[in-house]
Amino acid sequence: MNKNINKNRIGIYSLGRMNSKRCKNKMKRKMIDISLTEIIIKKLSLIEKYDTFFAGYDDYFDKICKKYKVRFVKRSMKSSLSEGPNKDIHSFLKNQDYDNFLLINPCLPFLRVSTINKFLKFCLKKKTSSSIITKKRNYFFDKKLKPINFNINTNRLNTKQVDEIYEFSNCMYFFNKNFFFKNNNYWDWKKNSYMILDNKLEMLDIDTEEDFTLAYNLYPNLNKNIFT
Image (cartoon, rainbow, N blue to C red):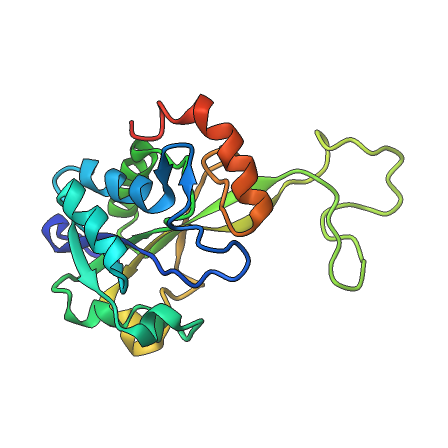
């Protein structure tokens, strides 16, 4: 990119499907009184001055979109069942008239609308593809169990003093449409920009039954903040 980005040519979206294997039916199950689908679509409805939409194959998603007056984009069955490559999962973007997209993971119930807006400002300032990373402070090993960020001769175990390491987060992606379909990838990793987000609650990603149980129990105390 590296040129001024036209705000009117940005499409902000999320997507869903019903065939999750690690956490069955997670997009439809209620978290006390609301589903993951309803949470993300409500957030999309609260984002101002940008076009938003939600992509899904099943009528359930369309119904929730109508409730919050968010545009529904019908995915193909192939798209909704695909595990990759990227261009198969997001094939519906070909028919969306935007230059750039912001994809929001629908499985982060505690990600705040204000954080989404903060990331948008970051992307516009950087004028390039962007994503989220988090800092980790612990003692890490590679797959051969060799230390990554510490010396084996250390005489203390103190996570406050160990070198921090960064972890990519499946949270929000900002990417260029033409680059995506030409390269079957969201960005050039050598040129991508990263915003650091260290809020563990906002980064809680529901992939498993354990994740869902944790979020379910946290939701009563956190639900007031997620739409702000």
